Image (cartoon, rainbow, N blue to C red):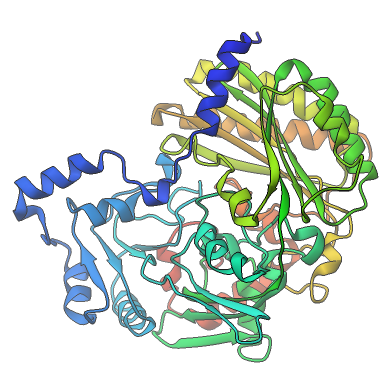
Length: 508
């Protein structure tokens, strides 16, 4: 049942509310008052591994105990279901201290995790009950003197990177919404507003600095540790702690775009327009993310629209712009302003999960099934105490895989065109976890069945790592590369230290 326009506008207000979870800890004043009134809680480390790390690192780094404000900040994740409470958080301030930490962890059995921005919805991928390594102190950005590359620390979010480099007239292939960490995003692939032009983020990586479990600090590139360079591009957190990333940079001027929110009454019209855009657009500067959103009982169509220039060519987006909107924030602006205006964190601090379907074609038939699935699960989500269902469509040009430096250039196979559909469900109660994981599996299969029924060949298409559901198999993500990745993990981590982290682990 569609809600009234007034109710929809209240939903729009929620969706548009700025909230950067990575910079905000819920009830932070409460935590500070606890710390003030109970000073004995500060620095009280009960775990022997935490104490050993604290005694071994330099003054550039710090260890935080439960109950302290910085500890709670380090624990915070976009999805509450991704948060665990560690024995301590460790904030290394140098690669040398990361090496110390890794050597200590290599000689014990304590579980650990590595957190960049904390935007993953895979439980345990960047959280732990053991030692949490927070990379927040790796926050420098260095632009090469020739302006052809940018090196940045993995404790940053993309907002930080864009704020530094876009005013200089350059950009990198990075995240599309506010609050996303650079580390996990890059190691998981990296679809971007610039993917039509330059490929994925991993297609533009020039180098990594990584501390492997032995404590050795490696410079990894196409000419140094080249096998590891291949494995780290899409290989997530399997090989060690990544401290720095160097990307190619590209000229960047003003862009045109923003977000448009429509009443779900226009689903059919907007679905047709999306199919036409996918079938007819040939401009690599143009892109959209149409989304079927259901919040409580409100059906909404959200459109993120982008043109890599101050104005789009006449007629390119006219169909979408002609539909009556509830809210519109589209204008000529800086790239950084475009990204920070995207309301990605309105559902932060709920439990949640991403899932994905890699599609060969966004046909009208498949888009119609996606719309139907959104309505179906948006309506039934309330039975499991769910509050938000989102089906995000990503109609890239079919030529985007050709931007990779070579075939099989990374751990994640992307030689064949695919459009990564992102499914996102959010809910407040842990008791509902199984309901929504099962629902994600069922809706994913329904969309796969629709694509197969119209003759799409999905067998050479693999799940985008950053959208993968925690129950997805390695084979569904990495396909024929799994044996090579297992061998590579064994080479650089013979002691299987990284198997004590979470996520999609190659050696388990």
